[in-house]
Image (cartoon, rainbow, N blue to C red; front, side, top):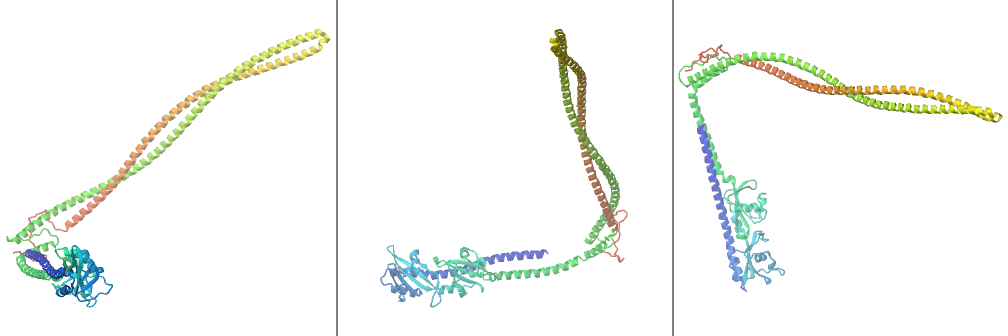
Length: 609
């Protein structure tokens, strides 16, 4: 195992090192390819730039045609031409005469060069006759700081395309040339010419192309369902063209995969040989140990007889294992004997706990029932006391009302006594008046009698006066009788008024006594009401205490039931433990060092030598 692990580690380290060096080598090789082809393209551009720059004399010459023809011939230009800012006429090296409406000053090559004030190169375009790609080089020339002329030259870029399409560091690798905006100028597939670079990959945008040309390390990207490593450079000076080389990653790492495959195969072969060798060695070394293993497996798969022991013959490693096994079995036997004794004790204790819990549960249930009855009785007493308190409050209100009515009655009786006294005084005054009337009647009667006497003396002349005197005397008599009758009535009324006054006074005294008693009754009822309220509060407290005691009793009952259940479960676990231990054959007293020769189930004795 150690050798295999060492081989694995060595293989991983070797693979990592080779992978690192391979990656560096791929970067160097790809960079060399890119730089070499970039240099070739730049030399092509540089030669044309130099030729065009040497046309200064021709720009200031009145006869530039010969110089234009020499430029076209030496630079492999298709045609060269010159245009002036002061005239729409242009001179072409091949003698081409433009149409009358042709103005070179309005052409892109002229305006671009005049604006840039330096040599420019136009975007590639397709030649109508040959179908090849053509670009135009144009350069402005100045005299005394003023634009004197612009010289242009058209040239096919087939040489550049050949350089690009010839890039193939591996069979599936290729190069391609793009403009600054990502338009393909050169590609191994001619149909991709002037197509956007995103045709190769959606991710190959002009921004990504700029990143690739600025990066020093290859950039991984999938092009047309193949993983490529891209590296590029800007070419053509300020043309904005970009040369990109796409190296096939699978082919570039073929050597690395070969090394990895070789390492894995070597590792597997060495591991197989190592396994066979170590297997043979272990088979020879562990043969006797396997015999001991079979013996211990026989003991373990038997009837759990822990009284058996392995023989301890010799002094080698196998014998030491047998001694250690015998010590282990002896300790296990002692532990199981102790566990058996403890399980029996636990069984008895759990049984007693369960019985005690059941008895306590019954008592708790009885106590709970008694508390519930007590609580019901207290609730009835509470209801009665509350009803009594309500009745006492109502009686107190009624007694207060009666006291108020009695007080009002006392006041009325006092008013009646006062009225009766006023009536008595009025009767006395009436008596005095009647006495005066009686006296007047008596005087009138005397006067009438005197008048009658005088009339009799007068004779015939006093007869009429005598009649009047008789009438007056009769009226005075009747007035006296009436006065006497009134006097009697007044005296009778005074007697009755006096009796009524006495009765009213007695009634007033009695009413005052009633008010005093009612006031006392009110005080007593208020005391009863206060006592009843205190009694109600006390009974409420008792009721709350009984309810709390009932709740605690219920909780105790639940805990007792849980304890009983736990005791039953403990008893079951003790029984289960006792049953488990009973599956082992144990001696009555644990003897860890007891030497009982091992004997297999087939009754054949095995000796370990």
